[in-house]
Structures are given as C-alpha cells and as structure tokens.
Image (cartoon, rainbow, N blue to C red):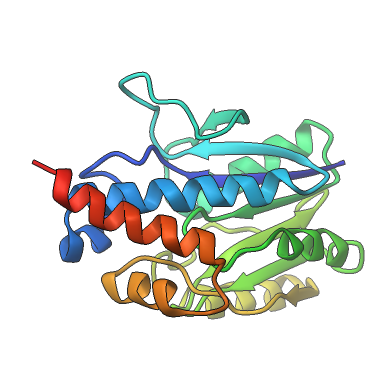
Length: 217
C-alpha cells in the first residue's frame, strides 16, 4: 500500500508563508498559500494511494482543508524529527511506500508522485530536489532506514547533507527532477510567468495575491 503525506499548515495570515509575506503582505501570502495547498492536495488525490494532510499547527477558527482528506498533527521538534515520526507512523500502519511532499510547489504534478512510488520499487529512498538546496519530496519504502535527525534544515545544505547521510548509511537512492518552491516574492513572480506552471493555477495565484491585497485590513 502507498501513502502520500502532505506537510502543510492552515493558510492563516501571519503564520503562512512569512518570507513571502514580507514582500506582498500577510493576507495575500496566506491566500496564495491556500491555493498552493489546494493544488497540492488535488495532485495527490489523483494518485492511487492514501492521502494524509499533516498540519504543523492544530487548525483554528473552524478551518477545514480545501478537500476531504485524512488529517494529522505533526509532533514537536525540527523538520527531521517530524518527518521521521511520520514515516514511522505510516509504516506502522502497514504502508509499504510512503512519500512526504511539501505544499508550496506549483510545478508539482501527479506524475511526479507516481514516479516516486515507482522508483521506490528499486531503491529505498527517493528525493525531489528543490532549487533552494532543499527538497520538495522525500520518499521511503518500509521499514524506512534513513535517519533524518541532526541535518541542517531550511538551509542551502539540506539536500547535500541528506545525500551524505545516505552514503554514510550505505543506502541507494534516486532523485526526481528539480522543482521550485514558492517561498519569496521572486518565486511567486516566477510561478506567474513560467509557462510550465498550470495556467489555471497561475490565474488563481494571481487572483489570490491581488484580491487579498485589496481586501486586507
């Protein structure tokens, strides 16, 4: 059995996409993130697997995910600890292959998730490199032997340190194509202009940014 876990959070002004918010404002950043989260869940739901939304913070104010999916709250600790706990929990539930993806990558397609599961038939770990030195996807097959503790998170060295950890552990891995997250205003500008990004999603991102800017207090 396969499981996709989307790491995300409630698109709440002041809590979501804080680096993006420094350039476009809290409300537009939250609105943009809401569209990215919804698109990510749609891409995941199109794959033959179980989908879980893993929230960094408990939702507030009666917020509901943009589509009906299983939800869980992440444990305390750095990103490596939270992802490690997620892998352990899902393998404990009986899943053979588990893929964790971020929720802010507009170029993500369902085929990327399918490819990750396919590659896990041949190697124990799959990574999806991001342009900022991190990764937008990490997948493992049971029992999940990659130790993610002690790695430099939110750093240009995250991916290279993970590769080094894999070599130290003697684990083979595959990498998918490099994609780009939306973390800063320049990333949003790129997403709106890049012809590879789904045009419908680009239109929703533009509308979210401009409408929320006009309506924000």
